[in-house]
Every structure is written in structure tokens, then in C-alpha cells.
Image (cartoon, rainbow, N blue to C red):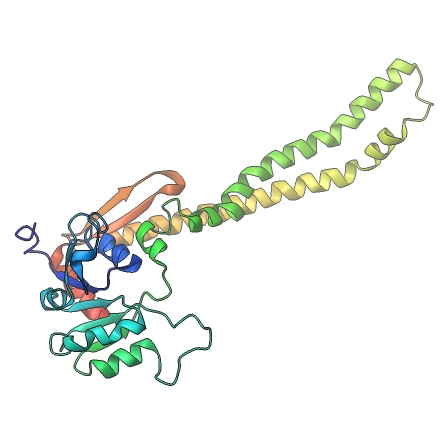
Length: 278
């Protein structure tokens, strides 16, 4: 596996938690070589990381990385990185951690990225991915995750329900007239009062008609918004197709579960990653 990965750009990941596993799962399909650095690689169970990820020591991960190293380490374990100062010199160190969760903001020592910048003055420390959860990074925005289900609730599900509600409400507008006509025929006269419930139903036909029109109008607006959203997705796909000629666009799934993955060749992705992180 290491011989096959020699032609791929190497990216180091310091840490062996959930976010490290998600990063490795995204880097490998993109044509990268993922080097996961752990304080004790022997204690990690087999199959924890995706196939193709290399679990090594922290020093080996840093030395094997070409330009970019992700720091997915809890702040209380920063002391374990102190011996990597020379190995990280000149490389881009991406801090993906958040604060300690107390909600009080950075402490007297500053943010986690500021602490890393002081620990590694010869490295280019940047902040990134700290607003993306490990779950979202691994599964994607349109991969049946809870985020995708939340998107479907106000748009897809409601839009499928609105036309049914509009048709049923419209049926309730005309049904009391038929019942009233049948009742008059059965009585043989039109001068007797209708039952109270039918009289109220007949008097509510205008409101029911307006409600049916409202549901139909909302259905039209929702359908237009969904069409605009799909058009934006196809526009994004066309933009991806206009990437360098050696790029490949992979399409997986169908319907609401579809997603596109841009997988450029190793050299172009490596260069763009470096420019982005710098």
C-alpha cells in the first residue's frame, strides 16, 4: 500500500479521534495519502480508520506529510507535540479544535490556534474546520444524515403535503352543496331548514376555498424554490466540470440523496490545498 501511495500527496493528521477518522475518510478518496499520527499506535484497534489510512507515530506522520498537517488533538494533550517543533517547521498546521466547551471564550492563554502558534513559531498555523462536526465531515451534507432530514422537513415533506391538503379542502367546499341538494330531494321541499352542522358547513365554504387557494399558492412557491435550488446544484456541478482537465467528478446517489465529489489529480489538488491553507 505504501508503494502505491508514493505518487499521492501526503497529509498528516495528529490525533486518532472521531475527527481524525473523518478527515482520513475524506482525504483518501481525494487522492491523498493520509498519515494518522497517534501517541501510541499499538493501542488502536484494527479497522478503526478507513482502509488505506496509515496509522503511525506522531513524528512519522509529521515527517511524512509534504506541506499540510492537521492538529486534531485536545488542548490538554498539546504537551505531547512539543518534540515536533523542528519537524513541523515550514509546514502548514491546521487547528481543527474548539474551545474547552465552557462557553466563556478564549482563556488567558488565548485561543487554541494562538497556543499552537506560540508553540510552533516556525510553522504556519491556521484555523479551519472547527465549525464542521466529525459526523457532517464524514457523511456529507446530502448523505441521509440528520442534517439532510432537517432540510427535507420544511421543504420536501411540506411541499408534498400541500397539494393533498389543497385538494381535500377543495373537496370540502363542494361536498356540503351535494349533501344539501340530496337532503332537499329526500324531503321533497326546499323550505325546511338544514341541520345545524350542515348549515355551518355551508356557511364556511368561502373560508375553506381561501384555505385551499392558500395551500395551492404555497405549493407553487415551494416548487419554484426547489427548482431554483436544483438549478443552483447543477450550476455548481457545471463549475466543477470546468476545473482542470484532469479532474474527475463522481456522482453518487439519486434524487434527494445525490451528491457530487470533485476528485482532481494529485498535483493540482496538492497545489490548491497549499494556496488555500496559506
